[in-house]
Image 1 (cartoon, rainbow, N blue to C red):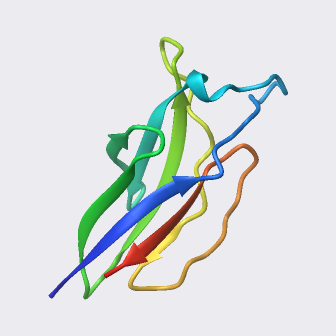
Image 2 (image 1 turned 90 degrees about the horizontal axis):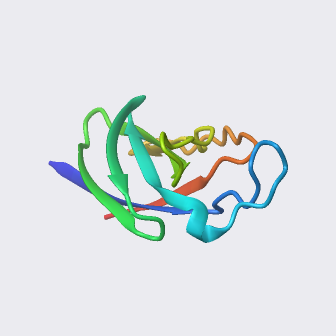
Image 3 (image 1 turned 45 degrees about the vertical axis):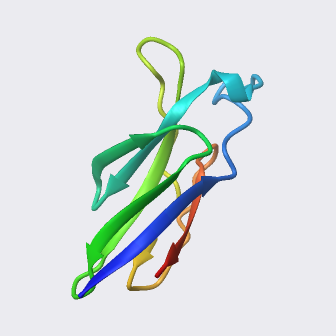
Length: 102
């Protein structure tokens, strides 16, 4: 049996690592990592839906990237574990991910 999860990325960074302001228009998108490997890229404000095997579950994190060329990427978000326990591993200027499992 498969478990479906929808991940929403929130609490996006508002400052760069050097302390300067980061406008929403400076954000290019969000990278979703599954099991530590880059799995998908989505637009800022979009949600990501995935199917995971209920038997072993999956761990997701997210980063945001800016519009520079090449893009700069934030620190990874907290971990979101599907079919398990959510563990908070917050890093400065990292997004936060939350999810809903159905």
